[in-house]
Image (cartoon, rainbow, N blue to C red; front, side, top):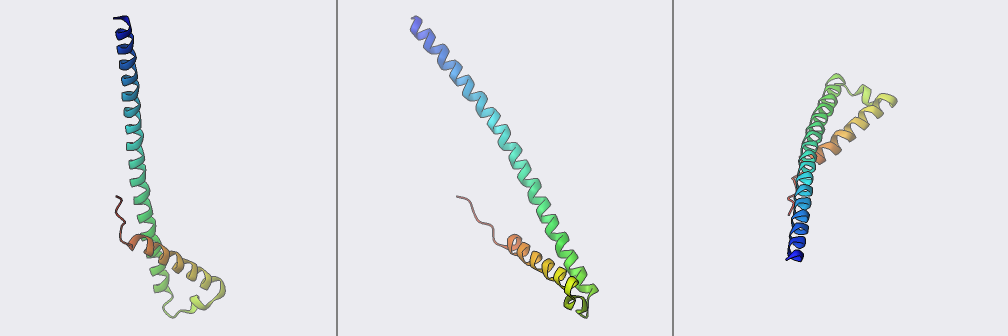
Amino acid sequence: MIPFIILSVLFLGTTAYFAYRAFVLAGVLADQEEYYETVSQTNEYMFMRIRQTHEAMQRIDRLGAFEKDDETGSTFELLKQVVDELKEEFDAPEEKEE
């Protein structure tokens, strides 16, 4: 009878410990999902602002004079490259996780 009581107490203790760990890990997972959503929203906002900035720079430079200048032209080129890379990233079809 005593071995049965000892095993029961050990089983209940182990079950309680694993239930507590599952609860803690569920909280950590929920925090990570909220963080991912926040980062995703921030990335989309920054992409939108960079694209708007590039479009505004192109409107300002209607004749293309600044694009041919050395320093300003390199800034235009870098900004265009960033916009193109971000457009590829954000406009690409989403991959389904299986």
